[in-house]
Image 1 (cartoon, helix red, strand yellow):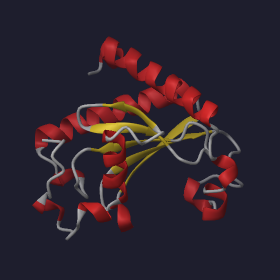
Image 2 (cartoon, rainbow, N blue to C red):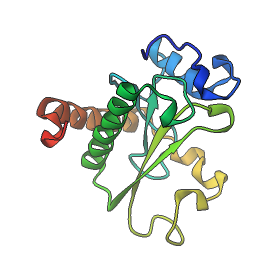
Image 3 (cartoon, rainbow, N blue to C red):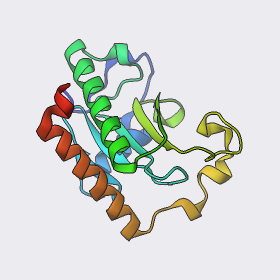
Image 4 (cartoon, helix red, strand yellow):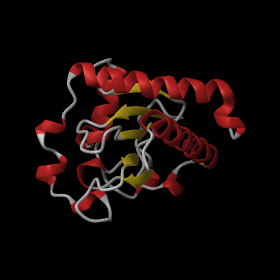
Amino acid sequence: MGNNFSVNLNTKVPHRHDDCGVCRRIEQTRQGKNPYFVRELETGYVVIGDYQRFPGYSLFLCKEHATELHFLEPEFRTRFLQEMALTAEAVYNAFQPDKLNYELLGVGNNRHMHWHFFPRREGDTPSPGPVWQLSPAELYDPAFLPSPDELEHMKEKLNKELEKLLENGSSGRF
C-alpha cells in the first residue's frame, strides 16, 4: 500500500495520475526534485506550501490517490489521520500561530486528498474567516514565495519538530 500509485477503483473519479497535480508533486518528491519537501512519513509527504501568505503554511500529501477518507483501507486511513495530527502538531510547534486551521482538500486537477495547515495570526486577514476570503492574486502573489534561505529555514524548523514528535511518540499520543 502507498508507494505503487495504482488507481484506486473506489475513488469514483475517472482519473489519470499524470493529470493530478498532487501525484505530479509526489513524483517530483520521489525523484528528489521538489524543493518544498520536508519529510516522508508512512502514509504521506510533508511539504512547505509554495506561497507563504500565512507564514508556515504546510501540506501533508497522501501517498494513496484517493478522493475521500472513507475510500482508504481502514488501517491506512487510521495511520494517515494519525500522521496528519502529528504533522499538524509539528507545524504548530514550529511556527507558533495563534490558531492552526486544517483543511482536507482534493478537487479540480488535484482530485487527490491533501491536508492544508494554515498557521493563523490575529488580524492576518481583513476580517475574521477562512483564508479563501482573500483573492487568488493576494494568496499567490510572488512576493509570498520564500527565498531559498527562508525555505531551507522553514523546512529545518518543521523537520526538527517532526523528528522530536516521532522520537517522543507525539507527546505519548501515538
